Length: 281
Image 1: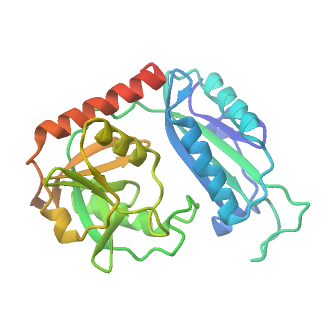
Image 2 (image 1 turned 90 degrees about the vertical axis):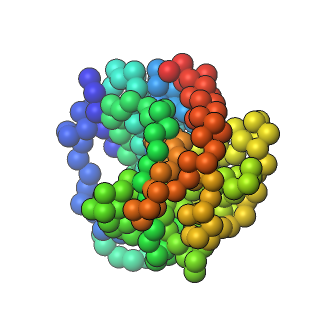
């Protein structure tokens, strides 16, 4: 069986799962989520994703009482039922099901857990990607993996229509992150990435990239950089849990990077090794 869906304990083919119309995820996007690759039943960087997930729950004040061990067991059950060797794993929690009103439901309303397992091959080739830049008009909760993703959806659609693969958000001249990736640059032998604050998500694969660079003797600086500095960088990297780590070949239709190809290859190969060691891919 493939493409498994789960909702509050009910499990089956994803198209058979039904969600109540009054689930607050439907009309408010009132919830948070995580997504990662899973190979051989092993989610990559699972504990880091759990850490970020429970941080998001706390930030949104969602009283999800399920402990990590139980959540892991439910996820493992879905992975096993899917029978997929390699899959995209997604889970979300909404604040619950209640009549539509803006204030939080009362304490009797319990959060809803949704899980999906979808066949997907891990992206480990590190092939260069093309970016466009866009004004960062998102709200001030970018560090929380909330379900409210309309600006991100509009950005990646604009990138697609422009023949690009990703959109880089720019806020007051400073590059924050991509529509569904973190962004870093290699400049004069140093890897720069935006510091963790309210304007970017603490990417799990971002952390893997930083660890790889430190292990390879590449200094890391969590310092913001401008769009011009990004365009003039020796190399630009995008990273995410489902995409892995890629370099960038063009921004707004202009060729960029390509000045540290050996380091790009070494970083991508190191990522393949880390991913394979943890998942058995």
